[in-house]
Image 1 (tube, helix red, strand yellow):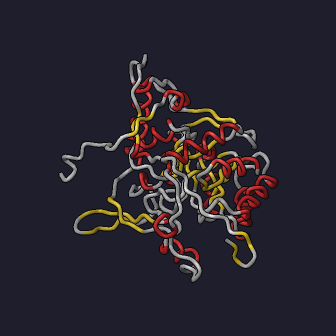
Image 2: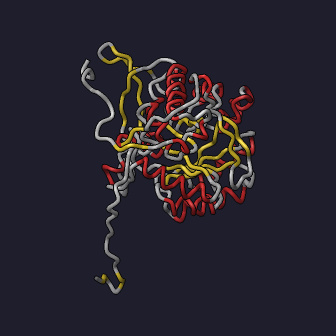
Image 3: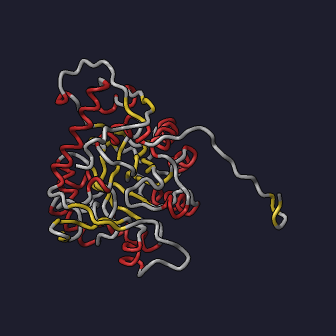
Length: 355
């Protein structure tokens, strides 16, 4: 059909089944490992465009207000894990943190949107601190404006590691890598406080997104982050098994001492607030409210207070080590080569869940 003289292409349906973490389990394989303690979770990456080499455990705390905090970074750095800091942290706070905690600098990234204000702020932080990782983060990584911004940041900082997203398909992963990004952030809608799929109908099952984008990225010597949809340590193992180089999480880290926000008491229970960065709470805080032309694509929840994040980190790393032993991977980098997924209709025995 035609509208106003312009040829209109018809919609298209992809009939191939796309998978989420809940749709699969990892098949166990023979192993020569005697103990989980033999498994190394550290990886060493050489990044495509910056040429930088980084060694650490490829788990990342999301750049949300409540999880991308300096307190989180202090704990994560001890385990050689990364934190993408909230983009709303002040320049002075950055300078103070990097001065007092130089041991954390290699395990934090400064976050940026794509506005002129974001660009000015990014330049100031990078010029005043030794941080060499930049996370360029927008909800929709498919816009030309975003690609142009990635190119601008790469031109200004040729040796900084650039993380960019979010996207869910191979062709856009390739476009961003060729535009200067080193690591592509993958995930649209899987997050626990994200409502993009509800508000827009847009999204992609996370495991299939990881499998397809990692294939595209690795063909160009690039890397990807599986961002969102993590509900337990097993999901991290599945993401890595599916080809993710890094795994980012927010909800799994909410409610801890190191998460921003006050502890609230409700009916004798301690709780903490956790909200999406496109929620009305975040937009009221930083933009004066939700603009008339858009809607909130995140929600605000209260989660149980969970104490220090160290216990959650140890539980997470223990689960991943155990997954590696089940498939015979002595190092994390072997995980994807040794993973076979089986499709399932049930993950867990829920008989005692009500208790």
